[in-house]
Structure formats: structure tokens, C-alpha cells
Image 1: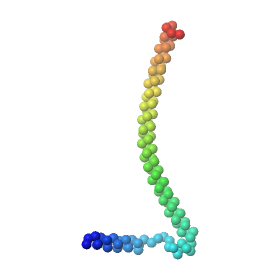
Image 2 (image 1 turned 180 degrees about the horizontal axis):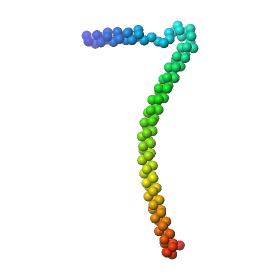
Image 3 (image 1 turned 180 degrees about the vertical axis):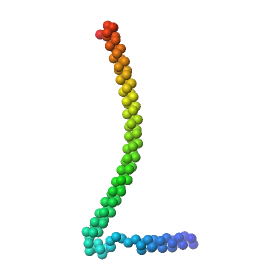
Image 4 (image 1 turned 90 degrees about the vertical axis):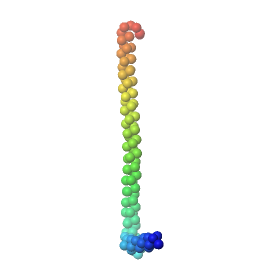
Length: 106
């Protein structure tokens, strides 16, 4: 009984919405002036594409932010390795220079 009332209520709601929502252009108007109808369709299509590209761009931005954070940590690790190897090279160069001055190596 309750489902029947709910079905009747939903049908009446659907009928109410259908009766109140009218398409912006009727078929007769479209037949008279097809350019206006096509322009309306084009405007709707462009609007849809605009929203779609904005949504896909926001998803790409989120993905790129996580990738940028990962790359930043990789770069900082590599900078630390370069700094250490530069220090080691500097120490080795100074030892070789001292040994050459002392005549221990040529």
C-alpha cells in the first residue's frame, strides 16, 4: 500500500516537473528557424565541454601536485649526495696536492 502511494506521488511529481519544465525551443520553432536551434545546441555543447575540461584539469592538478612533491624530495636527496661527493672530492684533491708537494707521489 505504501509503495503504491509512493509510486502515485512520484508520478505526480514527475508530471508536475514535466508540465513546468518546457524546452527552450519547440520543434515547430526549430523547423521555422533551424539556425537558432543549432546555435542553442552549440551553446549547450560548448558549455558542457568547458565544464568537462575544468573538471579534468582539476584532477590533473591534484595528480601533478603529488608528483611534484615526490620530485622535490628526490631532488633534495640528490642535492645532498652531490654535496657529499663534492666534499669528498675536495678532501681527496687536497690530500693529493699535499702528497705531491711533499714529493711522496708524482
